[in-house]
Length: 334
Image 1 (cartoon, rainbow, N blue to C red):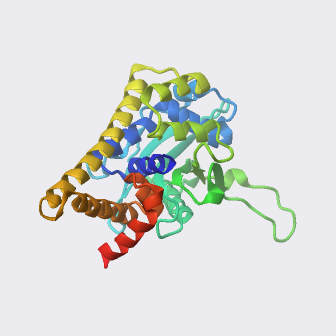
Image 2 (image 1 turned 90 degrees about the vertical axis):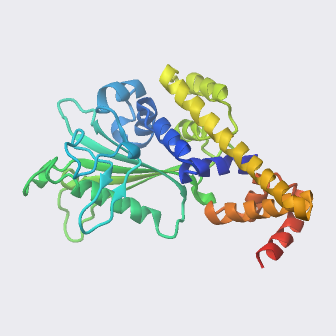
Image 3 (image 1 turned 45 degrees about the horizontal axis):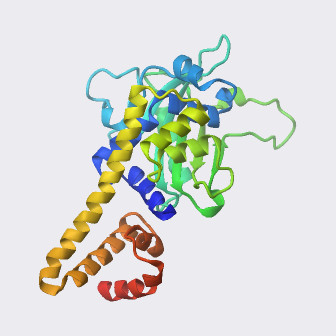
């Protein structure tokens, strides 16, 4: 069941369907969820009540990628754009992008937060370098909006925040912060952090309830992305443990995400059985279904980067038949 639950998280992030993609982003972009993320990750918000963060410090409505405003398509929304492009560089699309104010008395400094959902911790390149690149793009995109000419002192701090659902074992249920720092090579010059503190990366690595540190923000995000829990169970945890008032909007978004995930799994399994039966007209029903299971296992391994055992567990193959299906898969792919 744990493997199936993990697979559904992969579907949320890898966007097995446009509906699931949009649903995941809508849930993560709810202001109260963003507020819990800010409180759990950024020192500026650690002592602030989530509802105060949502109501007082998150500006406007967060933009999600399907609502992007391209630079060449007229007026920008609050100076923000979930697409960042230039003539020389390919378009970069952010999942969720929003402004927030730093809660310090008398100071009105903006943070520009980018949140990305990432399933694969090792997608073929260093994830932290991609996050670093996003920070650079978020800063350079401020030119002409937040600052002009050589007024670099007006650059607003940016945070690139990543939620990873399938991290390495050593990273499970951890939150890592990567940021600029300084060190004197000669002498003891005073600290100048206020001049270069313009960006940082937050890496949230989920791990499931069987891993250490399963509490707080890590548990909240795991519950939201869980396919094991029903909407009513999620509602109970959010209300009781996180004091989240289940408004009609929040409750509907959570319910929609659960319904979509269940529908995708059922459709995939039914489709596999139907295709197997069609093939079974000529080759025998059992053989046709078995072949379709092998195709499904292979697709899960290739497209979702699942292990062989995870893929077999997902299609409900008993552990006692793992060795047999491993051999059949080798023959099937030969």
